[in-house]
Length: 186
Image (cartoon, rainbow, N blue to C red):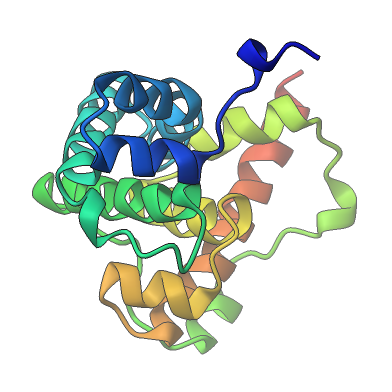
């Protein structure tokens, strides 16, 4: 193996950035930009908003690089920044949750969709998630796709855990309704 082709780890790149090496900033950006853009896009559902959040997140991350303490990977740290920036962007746009009430009994009043009745592909799920209202899409994305625990989602969104739990249950039902409707339209 040629030593000139060894790609430095994120930790090495962070240290190089802290030492003022400009090329390391570009290398970190190149390594993480696509994944962070996709995270922002899944939350925001608009390419121009996701691009804005991506740039803001990298700017903040690079300005705060000295506060990165390595308790997690650089990618996980950066992802947190992207998620918070995305949520702040939604908040600026006055994100309204559908059914913010936390009373789970209200769900029983809604028509529930049997998951076994719905057949879907990964692409159909992605397209259906894009059709969900912002509140549902955000909770579903953060918990199901990005892998955050519901308690973490509640903390990030500054709402009660019961609200996130209710939103998640409703988002799943709405997603199944959208998928079922698309199956019937085919």
